[in-house]
Length: 108
Image (cartoon, rainbow, N blue to C red; front, side):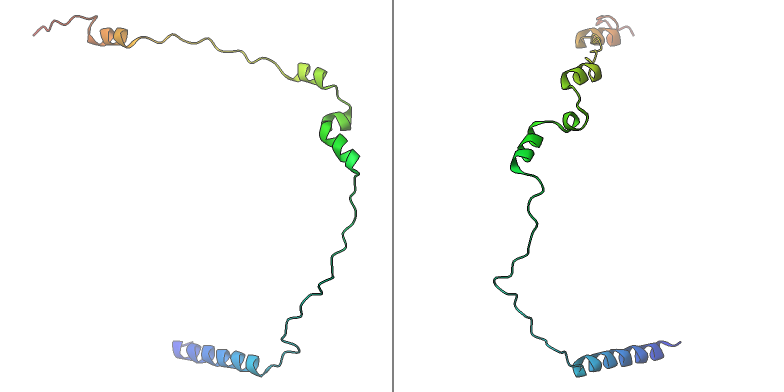
């Protein structure tokens, strides 16, 4: 297929599409405005306000499984041991090791 035949087909397709769009009559091109008093009907709340307050005060694990939180905390938590800190060498002692125990004499 040559480039010329492709371009001719593409152009004819575009012309046909635009012609059919111009000739086609839409049934009603105006947009209808929604009624001012039309409101969506929403269902009522599933839970009462008292139940919501109770649920926000009591943790879910207590409500669902009846777990005693004090016992659960004692069983499931422990103190993390702190590793002993290693002593760092001071800068002066490190320099002594590098420079030969503090001797400033130069032997040639």
